[in-house]
Amino acid sequence: MCLPGKFTSFLRRNFTGFYIHSTGHHDCRQSGQVNCRLILHVGLNHSGYLPEFVTITDGKTSDIEMGRTLQFPQGSIVAIDRGYNDYSWYNQLTKNKIFFVTRLKVNAKFKVTSRRPVLKNKGLTSDQAIKFTVMKPAKECPIELRRIGYRDKETGKHYETFAKHAR
Image (cartoon, one colour):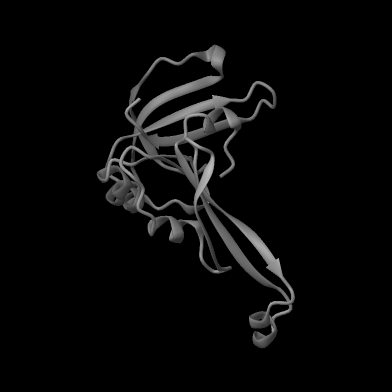
């Protein structure tokens, strides 16, 4: 997940995948492929900065597929890559009292239901409650979420996240 360091300070758990390229593995040679790709999925518990799990899968298993199989404890905060939006999984996490944060896709359609004041001197540009308006996301994830805008002072880059968290 590519979130700036300022966001990761509150995370309790996150998982990500690292690609491993192999040219000499037996299964690669048998299938006639010159290069094989494996993914190393790592779950990190931020309370001790230690991996809770490490799994190697074929290059066809995405992080979101792996994430759906995990049993996070209630109260966990999970960082999710925006490339794997799964609105029904977000709803399921919320029902299980597991919080999440992810980057908002540029083309996401939503309505703002309320606004909160922000500390502009901390780089925050918005703090809003939102609901999705497009049929599929609205049906799969009917819950209210938080949309938080942040501008990095060093790079000037603007980030938008959405999350389900009580704060």
